[in-house]
Image (cartoon, rainbow, N blue to C red; front, side):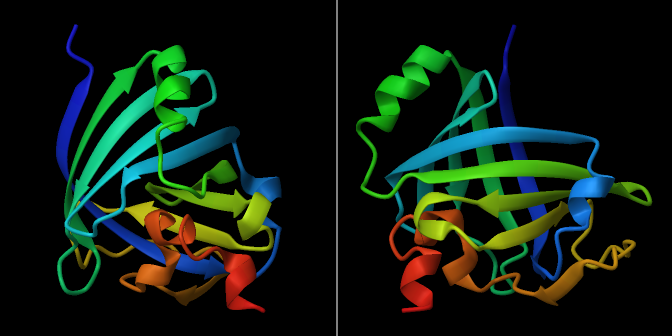
Amino acid sequence: MDNTLHMIEIERKFQVTSQSYKKEAYKSTRIVQGFLNTDPNRTVRIRIKGNQGFLTVKGKSNEAGTIRTEWEKEIEVVEAETLLTLCEEGLIEKIRYEIKAGKHVFEVDEFFGDNLGLTIAEIELNEENEKFDKPHWLGKEVTGDVKYYNSMLSKKPFKAWIE
């Protein structure tokens, strides 16, 4: 079985204005991730999501920050745990909540550790300008703002923004 995913990722990111998304979530998963490489031209991420491990490579985003190539392969959790020890400094810890909104799903990440207090919503789309329902807790759009990229949050966490 080939568990490799190749795709073009089209997503938009938003700040979150309240915690009411938690009541609407149909699923939540703990995620720990680190980066073997944070070069914006090719980030290499190791992730443990629930009881699954993943190796992901993401290419450079387009100018708007909405589109980039993504390659992902599921790996054994024990392999992901070992690879996390090789990652650059600054692990990301978060709980991801999944919320249906019309025909789409928002993934809302509530961050912990050095990013405690930051909550970001993402939506994956089929087309860059696709219309979607906006939940009442959705705030300012931050798509393309690199400081919200997980690879940057590992280097300059949210706590450093507010100091």
